[in-house]
Amino acid sequence: MGRGERSAPIRAGGACPVGEFGPFFARRALAGHRKRRRHRARLVRGRRAPAVADRVPERCGGHRVLAGFETAGRGGRNRGATLSAGFLRPGRGSEAASEPRRGNPRPAPGRVPSGGTAVTLRPEGERYRRLSSYLQSRFQKPVRTVTLRGSFGCPNRDGRVGIGGCLFCSESALIPRMADAFGPIESQLVAGIARADERFPGCGILAYFQDGAVTAAPLERWAPLVRTALAHPRVVAAAVGTRPDFLGEDALDFLGELSRQTPVWVELGLQVANDRLLADMNRNHTVLDFAEAARKAGERGVAVVAHLILDLPGEGEPDRWRTASLLNRLPVAGVKLHNLHVLRETPIEALWRRGEIRLGTREEYAAAAARFIEYLDPATVIHRLTGEGPPELMLAPDWARRKDLVLREVAKELERRNGFQGCRRAGGSAFAPDPGLC
Image (cartoon, rainbow, N blue to C red; front, side, top):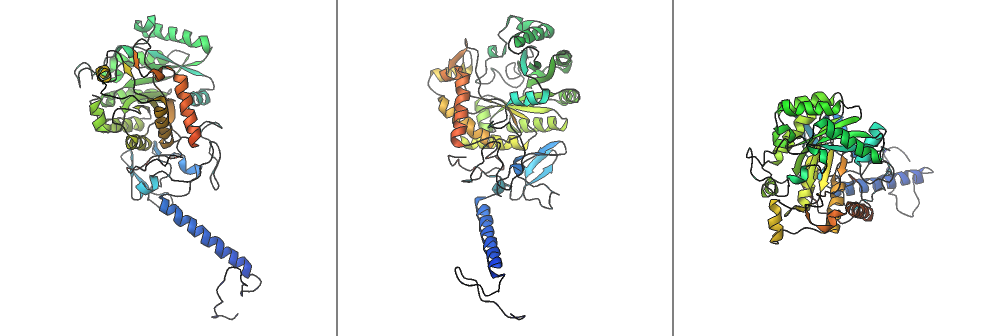
């Protein structure tokens, strides 16, 4: 064929007039056509083809960059997010890029989808990142928690921000149920280590300052107690529980200094990323308070663990989606998930007795927890999946008394959905209804 002459079009099942290489070029053209069709279909669904590498957070200025987003300077594109003042904010195209994929086949946990890069986030077979596995991997031995009481008080009870506390909170439930709970920190720690050694001889110890809002007390009162606990040779890490609106600069500087020497994290109560629901629960702080506290802690290298309740009255699937989306965008290293339970001597007890609130079933909670796990960034460590109160204070629900059955139900629900942590990672502000299967 001479220059300038045009070949006849290629028809399916017909002879190719291009010569002996015609079939080769025909196959190439057909493959390219199919590839373009698949690409257009992915755009319609709202995001790129799944790849394990896309779901792995990277580091950017000490903060986690969300998986599945492009940042400025990465490949010359900025379709997904911009990093500003320590926050990862959605940029143009982020809502479409961050909605959950619908109908895409999911690889089994630990498997790599076609075209993906093998990145191991969890041991083979685990559908979410467990705290026990994380601690075992980091310290090369089991680690057990010893809860320590310092009588720091709660500003939501003593009038500094509120009276009576949160609707679901019992001050008695925060007191460890041991005779040594009111002794010096040293004796509490020794007694706790002895109990841990009964099941796990020689294990590492996580010193957890839980009661009240620790950082609401003056720094000179609680800082020496934390240093005392960390000085014990068996203690490998420490955790400090507090409210996000009482995490001041002096407390952050102190925790940041400690975190450069030994693992330290701060546990912040969020419960849900919905200011109306927070007000209904008498939390007396906002979602912005939590976001600011997490951002400032991340700037100092202090790990943040968020406390959440997945079945508050009035809480729906969009609320859980937005909560996961918020956590995925902040330097949050771990989460503790709780079900709502009614304890004696709490404000919510009267509402429950009058029938004004409904508590969900174990199956409903397991379904909510499984979906939240799918929304959560795969690098986030899940510290707990359910909450239980002291047996003598627990009123309802009865199913929450059996933690093992709750964990089994969540595992069964994840298996039924073929879901695993991060397979429908939340991002952006748009909520996409759950299609029912991961």
